[in-house]
Length: 147
Image (tube, rainbow, N blue to C red; front, side, top):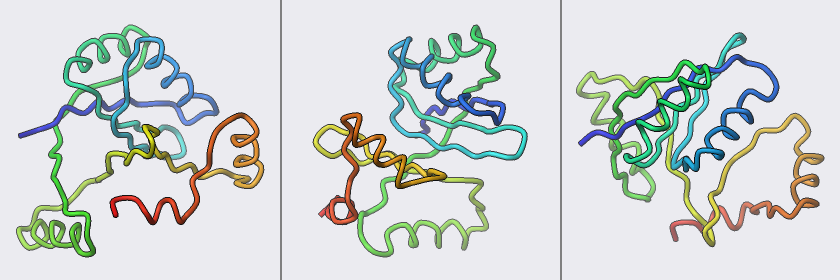
């Protein structure tokens, strides 16, 4: 009924997230869902991995000096239709069950995860990615997901 989630505390400095994902890559850990929350001083990276990877992932992170822990979350199948999420939220609100945070799994498109980036200079960032072999999805492509 519950899903294992890994939470990692990171210092809020340039390159910290890249270092973390590099370590996960080195140990062949696949991130299935990801959420990042930050403050001025630190960030919390929350992610879901396959069950078989949870304990090796936690051990590896702790050995590398990260503060990491496992907790449990609920993964709800929400109908992909207007109002689907609202209905679930309304039920929780009516029951007095507040939500601390939520995030979603990524859709896939031709076996590619779709990741949203907020960049200080989005034009230069998009050009850099395109120039290096990445494809940037258009709004029309995003609108066509789940159809």
